[in-house]
Image 1 (cartoon, rainbow, N blue to C red):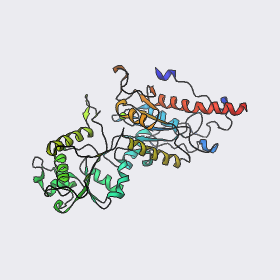
Image 2 (image 1 turned 135 degrees about the vertical axis):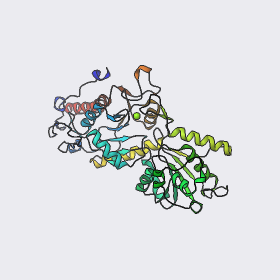
Image 3 (image 1 turned 180 degrees about the horizontal axis):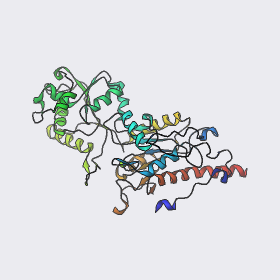
Image 4 (image 1 turned 90 degrees about the horizontal axis):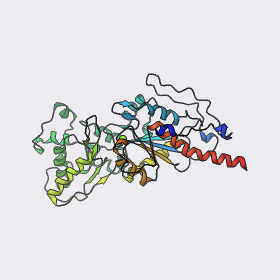
Length: 392
Ligand SMILES: [Mg+2]
């Protein structure tokens, strides 16, 4: 058991760290009725020293904190440690980074807060499409098509980001059902649709927020928009400005409750590109976001830095412990970003199937063991510095 081999974190006083006061003001950790706990009385290290925190964490959610509908019990203990229930009595910054999505950040954080028992704020939560907020100023006054998710939920998300003219493929079908005669709108779909004349509505960008629910309808309309320069049903012509196409999650496969992996947004992209290439002879240029793309990791660093600032920390990013369960998608991103990775055994990866395809920095039975290891790894350095100070 890896967890049993983890070293214990010594008490600061035992190390002569008089300036790092021991954890005293924090109430005993408890979770009651799913209500979030804020350990407001905890001291933070910056009361004693300025600058950056000793470390920070970026957690994957599925398979690390939550599995299916249930919270992994070790996750509550790990978050309690980061909220100040550690021997140093400091709050250690962390954010959550997932390729999931399809609903607004506030809604998802509200649910996570109830599940985990600690307040998860939208400012510390990144889902696949959160990065599209940065595109809102560019497209705020243009017409954009959003794909994926249930009914028009991603329209609401996009409007929340600042996009003003947002349409779904269901809107297009409601405008002219002959655009895809092999589908009839359900009453819920009809209810969700906006009535728009798409022959007069040039589309500037197609943003695949989440996994599309109706691949054939969506592929047809994507092809229509690109081939007709933004006007669905218009003559085939090159657009004055190329239609921008953005995907937010490259995962070919994902794990549901089903016994075998399921096709993800990456599979939809492959299907669209295969059809587009058969029609035109080449694939359509696109932008890809989501783990493990570099852009998403750079975006996560900005979000983490802003969150550190909210907790009162300053300075550069500290070492980031990226705690994940999927060696395929997450370790490559962590390695490219220069983050140490902690692979836990509570999700996709199963040690019985052999060594992981990509080597993490560390493997742990669960997120609690991983957090404990990372704290010891980074805070052990503080011990050495304190010992050196005492020696001078
Ligand atoms: Mg995962």
